[in-house]
Length: 100
Image (cartoon, rainbow, N blue to C red):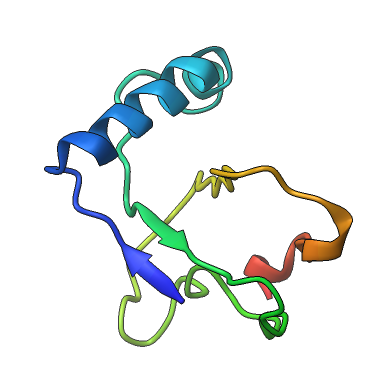
């Protein structure tokens, strides 16, 4: 299940601060200090849950609804909030599929 998180929640902010602090060197080099967070969400997957279908995390742009929109550069991060092992499955990345 995918849940959008409120960036006004103190627990969420605490986790976000920790993640940004740890990724600061990469983020600053990649997008500068004026970058913005577009979305913050979490996925809850219970033990034994079926794997997710292949899906896009973002829409392909430009598109008819947003002909002038751009998400360049856009980075998506997955941060595990629990220990992960091979029995829980893997994330499949399909590079360059956001361009076609």
